[in-house]
Length: 499
Image 1 (tube, helix red, strand yellow):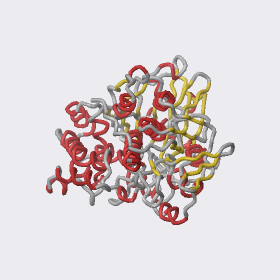
Image 2 (tube, helix red, strand yellow):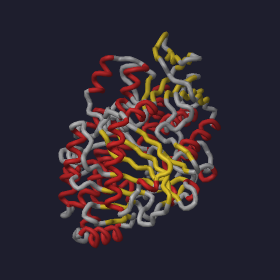
Image 3 (tube, one colour):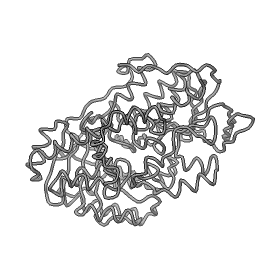
Image 4 (cartoon, helix red, strand yellow):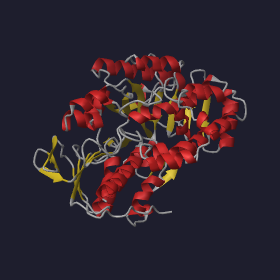
């Protein structure tokens, strides 16, 4: 069913400025335009998309940001909101195999959406008793049913959302949500093997968190993948912001790339946003960039900055984009090479150290999109988690690369380094500079506390009237689906503010 637009406010100001043209900023600008505002979208980089970017060299194309696409209907909803047919502008395919998992002990598992088949695969490959996987995924679905409306698609700070959600949750179910447990303790309740627990503990990393400290409520994340499927857009992940940019322009949004917001202030009831060439005034200002960066560099507020930087940062990453000669049929689009000691890996990250044996993620879009690599070749996006703010000098980067190559060579069984003909490296410091992520943290604050959700910046400022927030560092959190949700929650708040 197409989304019904919120009612237009009684008095509509002429202008809104959105800072940051990532997926949240693009979605926000579209929704604000639908409210009748004249929207200007400012982006410091040369193109829109934020973390959803690409790199091309010698016939290879790499998505150098988020690589897993779930809940595609949230993108479709934006086109439907504007009365357009989504498939005319944005198409995507479901991946039959979600992820290929490789363990140090030699076990291999290919996950899929069908619960029965997945249960059988984990039983055969890992020795997990039949029925355990299905039971865990049912638990994940239950968490989604109980919490999604309140914590993902709603605002628990607003009484109407809270009242409606609490009326639907039985006390017995509330005790099972896992606020005061950890994700690892939840997976231990369901699985007997270390390998199965490791597979589902991994979902804490979807928002840069630690499964041994993050609350058990994060067991909801697998349902976003196994309940709704894993997808890949035609044209790669950058097709998401490109299609939304086109939609925003058709809605009359003025998009200015290469235009950095250098200073924000409020004068005479209007927000003033200064750039190198022009100053913009508006009644509505939307921060769609890292909120800590916003309150540190763009709109300095020492009290807010101190509050935000006290929160633990999510992880950052080292990414090696490799153009690989040869085809490797044992690999899929998404691949995980696990460490031998997952708990020790996260202990190292907590201590601001790189793990000796890091888990390695390999994304190969050319498995599904053949034009992303030359004939007979593959494009490998290779990523390991790193502490936010980790030094990115050449020596440390090369040492991390060598660890990754040794691990892949050992677990795959051949010399990867001899097949690399293109390399493009992303470090925590580069990611921080490109995306404006404070300390290079990919998701802002980590979710390693039961109070993490309550500490995230809400979508509307109470201290500064007319200031609103969306994106991965504010409510409801990081990742493409949550960024899209934050844009909707923000625009709903703007509609109430203007009514």
